[in-house]
Amino acid sequence: MASGSGSSSKNENKNDFRRKWDKDEYESLAQQRLEEERDRERRDGKLPTPVKRDMLRHRDYKVDLESKLGKTIVITKTTPQAEMGGYYCNVCDCVVKDSINFLDHINGKKHQRNLGMSMRVERSSLDQVKKRFEANKKKMEEKQKEYDFEERMKELREEEEKAKAYKKEKQKQRKRRADDDDLEEDDEMAAVMGFSGFGSSKKVK
Image (cartoon, rainbow, N blue to C red; front, top):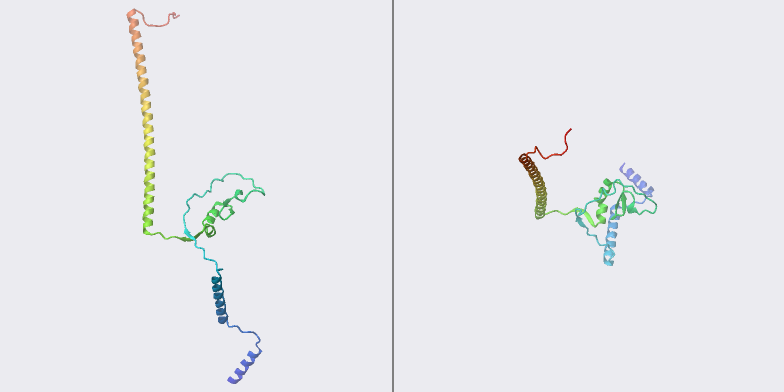
């Protein structure tokens, strides 16, 4: 039985005309050829040098999303791409139709690569964190000082207005007193001269 099965397997191998490939052998040959090509390119100086990109940094400007709101723009065939409807990115030379996609674009990998930055963030040290806390504390103190100054100026203006109003009232009171004194003197003079008062010479009918 064993001899019969062996002869049948030999007959099957003879009738199989397909070529057999050793995958491991060809994979090693391909890897070897790739390494030889890289070595050749290094010797010839043709291998491109890897680009070193900066770490991801925060923006030092405010993104303008509101300057074109509510405005009508006439677009023709000759209108530049930067003046077409939507949000134009001058770094990538493209137009994004709405603000959400524009923010996604400027925060995306393609835009950051065109700016020369990778998506990796620099790890902050303890000293950098302390300095940032101190800077934020100074900003808060400056805002508090500005607020106190504005409040003090407001109080001074209110005090000046109150002083002006008080001065005007005093002047009115003095004027009233002076008028009252003049009337009393006129009445006394009329009594001395025997007149009932200084009035009109016309008789009352």
